[in-house]
Image (tube, rainbow, N blue to C red; front, side, top):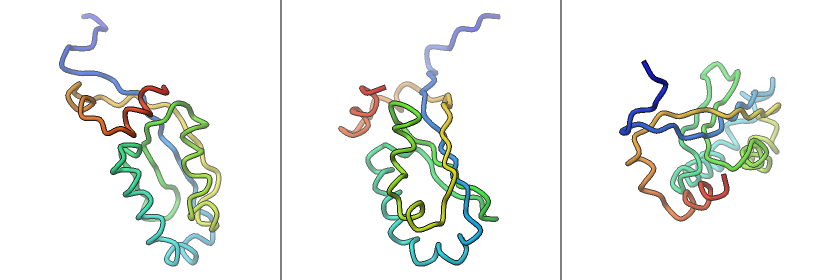
Length: 119
């Protein structure tokens, strides 16, 4: 058995950003949610965010993002209304190997290409 990756599979390095919800999140989130979700959707459309969502118990949110570094991944959310509005705290980023088919990476928007080039 070899450790080779099959030709029809590749591993894309992305960043898993974890944000802890504050104790006041349930109270603060509703007013900020439309702006936050619109921004998350725009970043998905640009290919920066691969997946995003929060645990329904408001413990943590997880965001899978394409960025050049952990710092760059965290910088995406420094000015997010959930961070500035006191919904999220203690953001952390960790590299994650995402298993994909090479064809999935071939269809890149200009933003996705810029992020990939920077890494």
